[in-house]
Length: 145
Image (cartoon, rainbow, N blue to C red; front, top):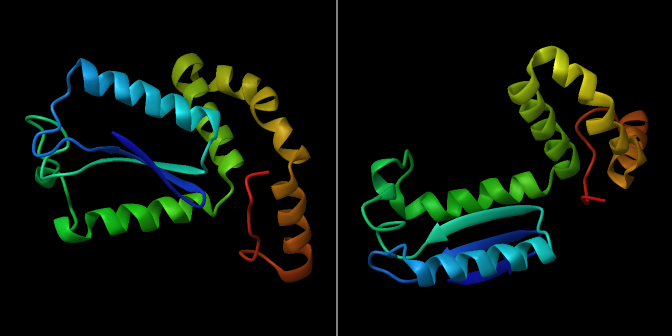
């Protein structure tokens, strides 16, 4: 198991090919890697494995809609795109979706102020609003702050 970082994107890599057997040692290493990620949060995270299978009996190539040779590069591009976006707003959106799943529409609606009002205090929101007013839509950049 390795934890790699490239800017705002982190990768947890299962590094015990060819089968990446999910045993106690791998689970302990995964827990340690997740703790390291939580201690220094990236803006995006990829979890991947070396070798042809993610872990024993699960061949990710069966599920890939991309050429297996391009899968990792595509995942990295996708993660970098997410990391460059409004990650705090994405997290709030996920919290609203979870609230709807747990409490229904009315329950989610009641929780929206608590789940989203903090976004107006972020640097990203202030910069996005200023950029919108100065340059129009689609020009903002985000830092996760």
